[in-house]
Image (cartoon, rainbow, N blue to C red; front, side):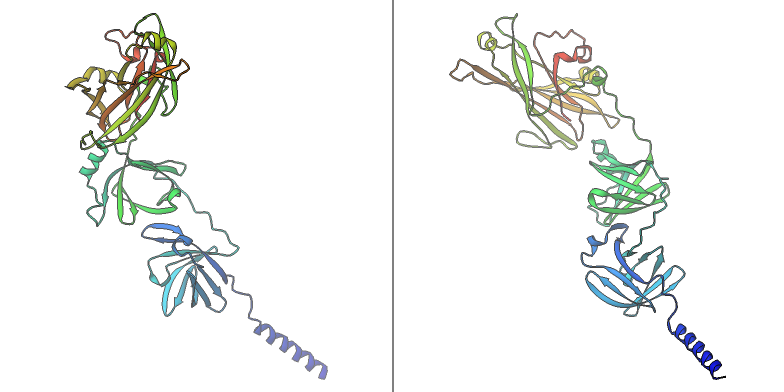
Length: 422
């Protein structure tokens, strides 16, 4: 009998010890490191928002710690399905806990934070690209009047050649064009700019996309991407253009002996784009494009027989015939002739201008070893709508004939040195 009682007491003791063991540990307990923070539609790395340590530790029994930018706070937590409530100083913050990821706006600060449990991996989001396409920027909305742009003003901005659109490709890549190109990656509802380390959200409403850029909302409408403008010069084989700072062999006829040529070097020594400068008056919606080309002559033929005037012409990369057929002399001075001509820019016919400067010759330079050299400096200037890149300067040997009524595209590209002001 005593033996039976002893066995029963042992069994009861084991049961009580099992009850005191607390059962299985809470699978949600652990430390969750700060990954990202989202506010005002923009998502950034947590380290960009809070450089100091930032994490959440859930402990069994509903207690824990929040470390925010290096400052720790005791907390309590409860879980109802996937809804987690974190209480700090009596303030409840309700978020979500699923697959080792906590998303919550702590203390209702307006910042949605994402925390990842140590040892876990971020679940791959379901990615769709339903909104792929060409999106034109139609206006900008802002509480600051200086940052807002109406549809009428935006149309004018685009008419003078400023790029204002966004392309979302079906593979999740793309770019935002606001005068300069900003590469991006995207999925429905969110666009990331890797170079800026920034992610912004967007919404679709009444056929418009609204891209939230904190202080400004960019409004876009989906449309058809314009077909690229066909270049008449490229179609005719004029595809090789001088590079700034690189010398190119240049042949020209001698002045005193038409049977002989002189060989020199032509170099684009400067190329500038500006809206105004000393001697260059501004014109609203237009910019100046100026190129300086130096041609050095240094062989014996040049020294002995002189150099005939270099022949040059002004071309339009896209519409050669349009420039030639519309150019008209509107001003003639002792140093330059000004011509006005027509271009097609962003689908519109617009005026453009070029200036024929007469060029300047240097004196002959002799180095004491019997070598002689002189330089012809040519400055060519265009006044064109902002962003227009179709201006071309050409120089050629003066012995190359240009038949009446012919266009440059009727001639041999090998007879020309070309510089495109793009």
